[in-house]
Image 1 (tube, rainbow, N blue to C red):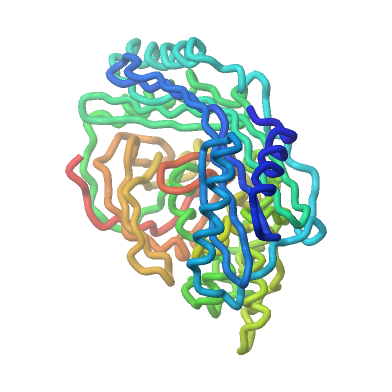
Image 2 (image 1 turned 180 degrees about the vertical axis):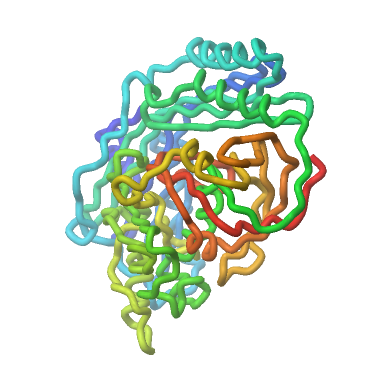
Length: 461
């Protein structure tokens, strides 16, 4: 994998081909491998090593970017020339900022997320993991499908103003679906450290969900108390995070417009963004090399802050009017330029419940007279953006709870639910964990017991 010195050498070689003063080089890539299995047998084994070198230049209030995966001198010369040619074709942008200096970007201790054991995972180990999970399925007369993946990745950014940031990280991921005749179960987990991923335990949980939800019964749609496992919470709350963007607030398309510093959620909801949290992942810098700051987004239900890229921060400070009701400063959450997205919190962590009030999923179920246990959600789409009204379906393990026990599996529901209202109705929470889903990026979130969750329709499966 590329070392920091090798990455810096790429930058130096690219810079010498530039005819302009402002040059930025982003380097991203590494090794990734995946073993896929279905119908209780391995079906695919792939491995790849690739790096992208993305060059941005800026002059005359214009900027553009070109990308290549050729690391030789000819490839770097071509990509620099392409970036300069594209820049000349742009219209001047009076709001374009000079590239940040090293002092402006700031620099802290980079999170250490590289594990030799994870980097050393090979095809035989992934096959062994797949075999163990399939073994769980066979012993219980189920059909398993899923993936076992591993990777090592580098992100680096250098610019001609002195910014030099480098991050390397490993990754291990397991996802498994267990299929029975008319039911299914699912689990997924990932971590920079392969030792934190427990495939057999995940397979056993998925198998148990498939078995217990066999012969699902149909319930009437309506509002129910639900216990949402972390993956379900993650996929719902992911839609909310795009509204914690300074650009979304500035353009008045955020559900937080006119709601900053107000109690929008329950008092038991606190959310922050912290790249250095021990359960988080990713580099400690953004798409311009700015240091990622810890940002308190929600405190005891009150919306506190949004995140800002450099350009958004500068625009917000110049904008007329009554202000946004939020502290305006670059927080290190921007995407590489040029982009129309601005920024988003990418290392979201939910605050833990008050000491002594944390509950496991099992404890939440035990304290529920009647309700529904939801493993995960899928096919989620936004219906109404200001209230974050979402629609989607339950999947892979939906159960009826009665008198504190899981009684039987139920047919999946379609839901129409406001995330804002959901976070006002949280009755209990577990200790937050690193969770993975299919509709949003990974977060550190709790399981939640929520009242009045709105199911609108029963599906056919």
